[in-house]
Image (cartoon, rainbow, N blue to C red; front, side, top):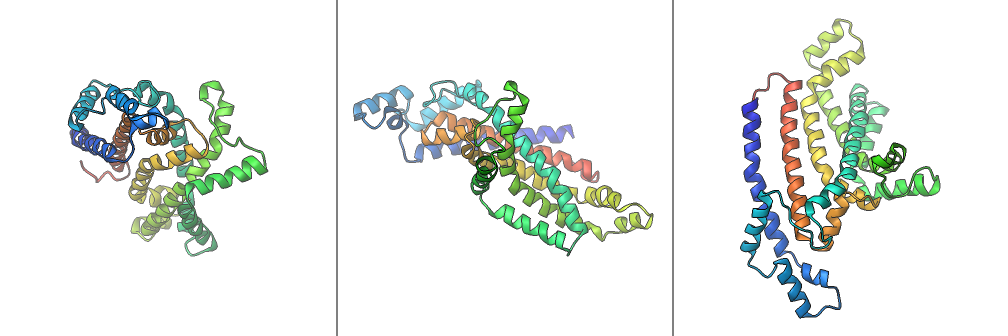
Length: 313
């Protein structure tokens, strides 16, 4: 096990290097000049050239890359062009809302979707099954921002039950923190509930006809135990895979959701950095998300063993 984990961790090194090269080159090839954005609309060519020199953008791309890598190895993400502060400190100040929203979303999605999928499999072919499948199709088809604005209109504007936008840090009061997290979490959860419920239904249906399920029923075990202990456990590997991919896919959803609800998280920071052509910030965020993706995949592979001891590493 330890050897496998070490091997997987070492394999992340070339992945991170390739991502770093790809992101760096792609940003330099993208249209738009950070110096022109910083200088403003009324700046002349001389002022823009001065800013480019100050930021080091007048140097060859390979020189800029190796300087950036050199600082990165020392744990220095550089200084934001736009926010004029350390990128590391900038991301650290924005990470709490993103982590809170991501954890709340995936927790809510799993709590709702797994029982829903098991119920749909148990009631296969009935109105309940059709309702769950209909919700899955609808939930996965409607864009996140449409769900967000719809929930804002109903629960914040018409019913006045929840705040429209914004975020309150947990240190400033748990009540306000949870209240402002409800709508963003529900918005982001809809697609994941749809996806996980559909996969759970399919996986449980696949094992419902197996001998061990019939044996459990023949022994007189109650249906709840048959479904959740025998059927769901043996159907768990593909469900865990989808949940892992869902967590990794949260990155894109968080960017949209934080923008809709004006949450000052890393997703919102990404949008601001892209609009400002803030190269150091964009590079650091994409690298961070890439590492998160790699570690989530590793965690998913390790969790497989819990549900299926036959898996060897």
